[in-house]
Image (cartoon, rainbow, N blue to C red; front, side, top):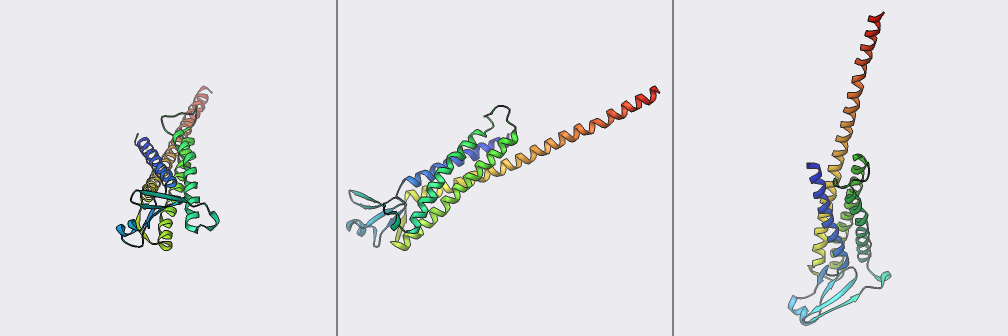
Length: 216
């Protein structure tokens, strides 16, 4: 029962983390850039927000974005962030699917528990990879933006990416650890069962031999 609760908790946390990664990937409010004070930048229309896909200008009554379409001219941190965040978002789909099919309440015919444990471990490893992609992206992007433009504050998308990354790492760790322990306990139970069966055979053989000798 406790293992099932851990598995369900890890699944829900992983789903929330994957959702946070996808929201961060699809939005552009990663960092807010300004060389002067906040009010001065708004008056001069120099307050900008930047994400992996667009660079925006923010002022009173104006929010204008320009898409970053020149792929070959983009800095390395933007290209890396795009690649890693897209990879994490794509890997999350098969991971959630495998974790969903390995839930205790779902049964695929006469599938043994060991197969479910292996599928849970694989799904947990994929979720951990999603979290690692989020870690590299959400750390490298603000550092690169600060070196290029000068960074004033973090945006909503970056906070969402951080929360999603933490949830993915936490959920993946829970799923991987609890499934590994469950797999070991399942193997130990099988060993005990077979040893118990093997221990019952010798008395039967000896009793048969005793009966034959008595008959002779």
